[in-house]
Image 1 (cartoon, rainbow, N blue to C red):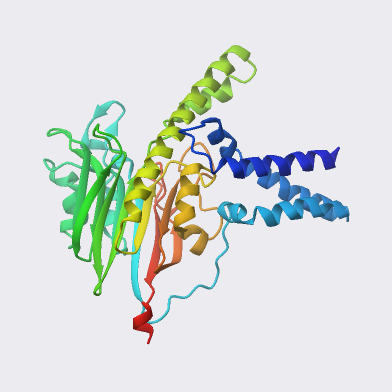
Image 2 (image 1 turned 180 degrees about the vertical axis):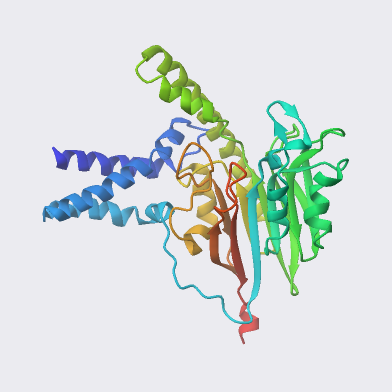
Length: 366
């Protein structure tokens, strides 16, 4: 019986890996199968321990699954100890943070009174060279909540703010990039014709004579509220209610899978044309076991995998262990000191940061 279950788990794992390659925009059920991949990965590891404790030759089966799926295990848990940044290297520290509009919305009432000054000040005084801020909120008409001024102007940082939603009375919302190094070019990637905070923003930053392109990205939200999760749990035992709540969750997930599959292709199309090394960071609203993440990881290196430790969860909400915020980088750069800042818990996301070393070009090594 245990052998059969182990075979089922390995088969499940293989199907999940295959579904990572399938665009949910073309076959949406693949998104759900890929989403479930952490379950067989964990179960396979438990089977490895089980067969090892029984000293059974059957541990060959989960061990083979472990070897074949090692890349995906690395997405679950990272170990990178003792990394040291080379002396005299050109470095760039990047902070990425979904600020949740600095908590400026009080329920359905748009008001600046709830803006967290502590969050604004934490960002403004962070030592990073570049800030990539999603769901950035700025109210130019209220001095205390003019976050662009408090983060950028006061600390001598250049800024590019791409506005997705705006209002003269309530302020602007979008994605902002702040840099202590010169910004020589910038632009936005609009995923739809309709104005939205879901977009990509890029800026070319000069670092000691070299240029790096930074992308700040906010992909389609999962649109799952804490109340949706709670309602589904509370409906267990009531078949009709449970079906209703489960279908509601499934519809929301399906829409997100499809939208992000299209958006990541638009993003990568732009990234491929970059004449400079790139850093792509932001709120991707997808876990590492998704088509979105898989497409990015196929062309770029993930900074958490390269330089992080532990699970690295970034979602500060009812669902634990979700890493939906990421930083990726291209060749020519190497990541060090990746960190999730759990000390800043005022948003529904935790900030993440990493330091990048610009690797010398072949002619510079001579």
